[in-house]
Image 1 (tube, rainbow, N blue to C red):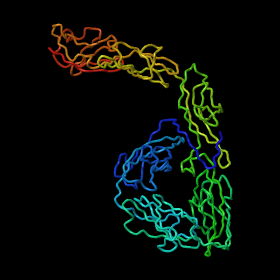
Image 2 (image 1 turned 60 degrees about the horizontal axis):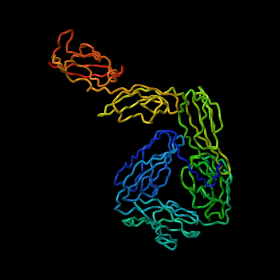
Image 3 (image 1 turned 30 degrees about the horizontal axis):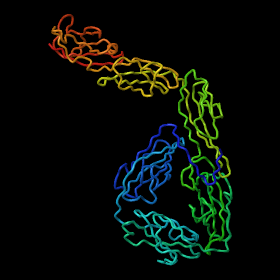
Length: 578
């Protein structure tokens, strides 16, 4: 299933190979109020390398303000046009971890302030104030004015002029595309006035200007020397070089992601024939226009040239959507697979859809042996394995392979080990909990080794009585059993006794209300209040009559200690009354 991507638009499926941890909102905090509309949004940075895509909306998980804009590896983001006032803003993240696994987090919300003052003024961003050799088809871009909810623009060819456009309301955007090309050989004057519900700035905003280019028919165009026009596999870090032009005093270099001036993101005026080192993105086609100039003007009709950076699987930015693209498939194979001895050899199928598969066995020295290149693998023994999947994609007429892998272990299930099966009395019924150790998933029964079984290890509303707990591996490997212990509490031991020979409370003894409980309780050791051992009694005897060697002991507090099921130490105290 090869994918041909001209303008790259890829949708990545979500997968979870392991539990993920979402960061917390730390600035503003969740449920903060009266938050500035110009606030920077910050969240906890996670351990390891992560890429964050942030969305902001007016509903949980909403994207109507910001839709999955990347902050790179930085745990902060400032909305480029601010936030609406008096509004609850919901913040959600898509996190891409080191394994290229994506997971979504809704990390909180806050309420913005009531803005009661006008905005401040703004300044030109492109072209800059006093720029020269500006192309006539330029789009005018300016900086965000804090607190602004809209802008009005006036353009003229003289100071305070408005012969091109007068106080045009562009709304809450930061650029304006003039309806026609601006006049050549002219100075253009621009005034941008921000506003909000409180009005425009309290003071007059400055007018700025720039010079539209003057053309010169005496200058020839140049061409790229490195990278050459149409070159591919160019490194992301590159310095552009071009051939010199006689009579040129400098060169205007523009770099864009399309052949159109609206997509120019880099412009520089350079006297040399080489740029500084530029940091570009992988898997992109870039367009370069180099226009020589001198005091008489700039060359006319210089065409753009293009080159493509090194093609890889990402992450890189989709030029159409602005989203971060990762072409590596997602692996969802579990980290551990438990098998019975009787299940070997075992045929295991890949849980993921991909163009290709590779399975490796990991040796004790860390080396690997390829054992399958199909969707299935036959496992003959326990051990450590590597699972790799890959997709192929055609990008800029090149076919590349994008892979992901995960290690997993195969273990032999020796069956469940019941560590505890305990019944707790609840009024007139029992609540029984079975605790298990093992490397598999299990089901539980109190009936027999044949069931019926249930997924929960808790049994509620059970009638009083003796029970045996049965635990079975879900894959049918083995069944274990253990008698259910009755809960032994301090109330099962008398608080006092009165050995006066009246036949009532003459003996102190464990009050077993069932044979099961009596079997659980070992011999009982009795001590005086100073911790001096007196004697030991068995639970099947009458108990202690308050004497030692036939001699009555005085009325006092005494202590007892007993072992439950040979494991749990249990103690308490009681009174001897005379």
